[in-house]
Length: 367
Image (cartoon, rainbow, N blue to C red; front, side, top):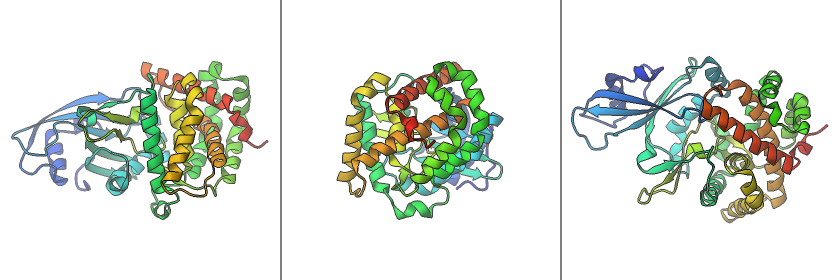
């Protein structure tokens, strides 16, 4: 889909002529022509490595199925963010997800109207369904209600169960083992540590600050011991800013987007990422074990076998310390200059520090 059209690099490249050609190439429109395009930049400070635009086309005639608005996703214009995304394969993975995998996913995902990608040039475009008319997007800074958290974790368990040790996981080259992705990121870890300490060191406990300099190799050693754990298709960035909660009559309760980071990994990584990053500290402490039990029970009720509760809990705690290493890398690399971005990073880190401390997660690392 979309191999013949030039790939836009910025909002102004999505012209009426280009959008007409893209929508016709995908058979989204047939007779209508786009005569004008308005662009609105979205997701400032939401932690997304790239440009997200709401695109509003004007057509020369009415046509059934012609989208009133679309979401366009393009790579970052920032060299650092683009390099990071290219290193992790984020854009390529999401492009392949929407063109090859999305119909097999239990989650409600946005419809993809058009997709094109050039891996060598790190150049991509996605035109996706705009769900803002049918649902409300979550807000990671504000956090979620207990009801939203319960729904998100219930849907997550159902998704994980459907992909638990699925043979197709190893047949999709773009869905890499999460352990390999983390190890690739850890190559930048030594340089990231002093930058992260300089920026956020005052928010670290002495134990965490002291552990950071040599934590990279210890993370690698810990993960190697867990390579034989059961794997599933993880989302990798399962958080409120990547979710729409459906309005009454929308036909869905929860829709999940931003599929840049799926991998073959422990399901507990997604649940740890959601609980420490999207639930305030006191609420997590009060309901964490109940949420984990519900997640585990849902796995078992949907066909997962050979995964005892103790292993689930161990995977959860180990995922917290892996998350700490990933956060250090991202905190030193991503642009947090805008107000919401800095606020988001600070809130997430405070919540993560609390969770790592509560569970003594550093003890999972070998000496």
